[in-house]
Image (cartoon, rainbow, N blue to C red; front, side):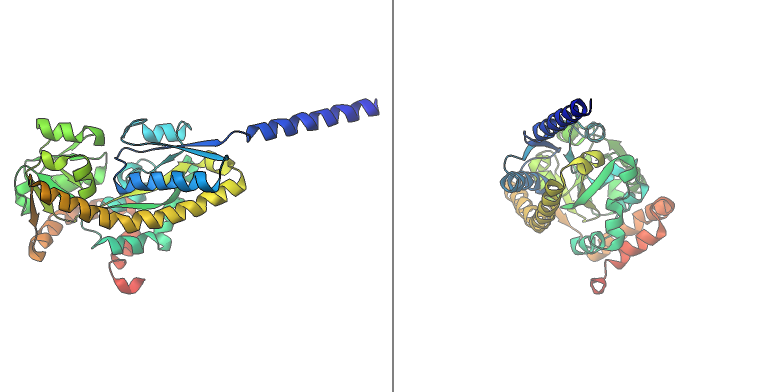
Length: 334
């Protein structure tokens, strides 16, 4: 009986080992879905992540990139991540209000003076704490990717806050952005990114807010007569993964991917400004749209008009986080 039991145990060990080997014999497929073009900062970052992951983990990891809402659109991608149908997303920071109210900080208009201030905040303890603030909901933040500062576009010249009154602006699904346009006495209209061009073309909406890379890649400049260089808000992304999927990866795979993500993040953020400047020039060269440049006094008037939005969301975001973001406007905080 003892010998029989030993043979049973040995057989079980061999079978278990075979199953374990088989489980990782095929590459781990990582589906990376996003809603923008390959030529944008996010699109370039996704492709670089794929390249480095497959180079450094040959035969172990296979990354599938799905751009332009080709797998899931704005309204479906978060649900797909939570059920494991995709593994990595980089949604705009406006998409997280239902999971973590504090992340609404990034939608507050005219909070950051420039992208250097955004960088300082995101690299601070306060900024890093937001990456891990949704793990109880199954979402792990891996880093922040820049797209750039947002500009206003419309079919009329927007020089003063009064010029925005009555216009219908496409917005992301964000309570803060809703209030931003209501503060200007404009009408926000929630609309998926993939539907924005048609919405502007047909007049369902009259205006939008986007960085130059999104304006150019989505051909928004072809259906909008004016762009106001307002730099009024940041459109950044949080690179996220399904927490259970990430924690279930072999340790060496997870460690390698973590290093790759850190590398790619630096590259994406370094390139974002250059890509925005390139696409801004392409818009100017196209000659279809006039770019309006605000004086410091004009920009201050816009900032004052939307200031009540900060007060409205201070309780949800936290006065401490808003103060940390304002402190990041000072280069001496580095």
